[in-house]
Image (spheres, rainbow, N blue to C red):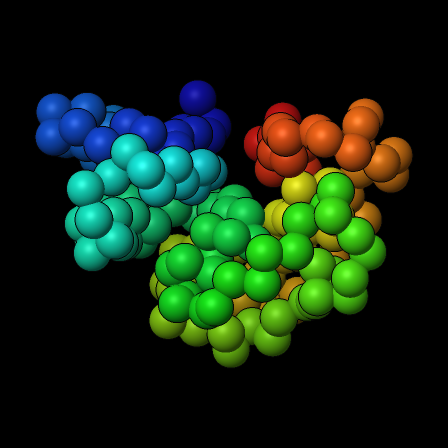
Length: 157
């Protein structure tokens, strides 16, 4: 395989976490890129500090990372804006943060950090450039759409 993909769900259990980290090591040995799709279900974790500790271990192994706006706010300890696609068109949903905001999360093997916000813009950051592209062109199916992962799923595909 050219790419090893995983998300934080496999970090919840000690044995799954160990197996995942071993699989990453083997994948790297054979030249695969590592893609970490954070997909962070906070209620499944014991505490914020535990979550950040295990995320940090996995984060440092990844070449490509996809996080949502809410996940990056959690990791960078930014007060959440709670602006989601289906609520309104407030400009805060479309803010493109400066790369400096993520400097504590950057590491030498990271090639691209993607930050998604549901169906809004997809923001990308590399070691040399950053920008954004439009997310899904069509509005959500209904004003009550609850699955806002389409932009992240599109990146992974």
